[in-house]
Length: 325
View 1 (cartoon, rainbow, N blue to C red):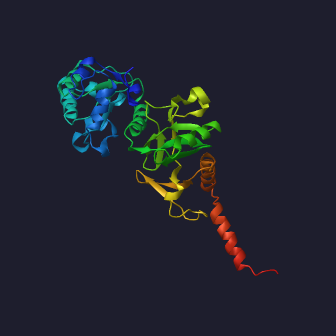
View 2 (tube, rainbow, N blue to C red):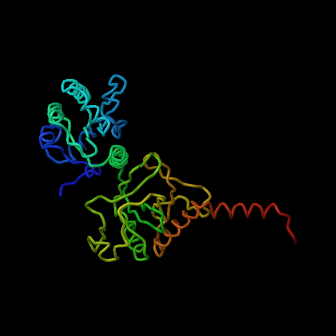
């Protein structure tokens, strides 16, 4: 099966003629012309979807350039009420605006005139069985997911009791071995070696693995292993919110080791500051246990409990209180 976008599952290609004539893609696949149409648009308008009602009624006040146009029941009724010449003129004006695609809702079959105009202007034409507003809502969410900013981070990601942890460090420091120990304790793998991080709504980071390497790990000396086949289906998950970044660093390369934890460190990904912990690595240290404790401590902090701060406040209060001796 060819890869498809999330939005393509909501759409039905109206005719092969409309898709084949679209010179922006050589493939007659429902997802490709839509995806390439959006990729040619400006970033700030890639996710825009609009009803064609305003485009038909007040074209001069409603620029539809680079927006998906959806024709629902009201727009279809209005279009049928026009003469053939007037309808063709208004459809032509809209298609000239270089819209990514035209969608007919409520399973309406576009008339031959619309199909011919879409063919002439090389605009992909689709229809959907969904009602207009439900399709617009679903398509908006799908496009937001599809075109969310993303970046690849070198490291492995695991889910520890609901805390998404990205484990970073130089090659050979022990990232994969630590992940294996965490999987053995019942936690879940999200990605190995490379994590794809996406930013949703400008505030939420979500990590996932690439389709090729998903649910697999590379272990030096063992090769490639299938994680769910060895540890069970509960040991993997396709994606997880990123809550903590842990960097493994050689003990001898650290200038100073934090022994209190009062200073909050962060790691910036796509403009979002993520809590960051640096764990010194040396022989006989249980790194997996330290990562587990760091994740649990982060969970407590998210609930409003900061152990280092509480201890510091208690110590200051004890120093201010006169001795009872």
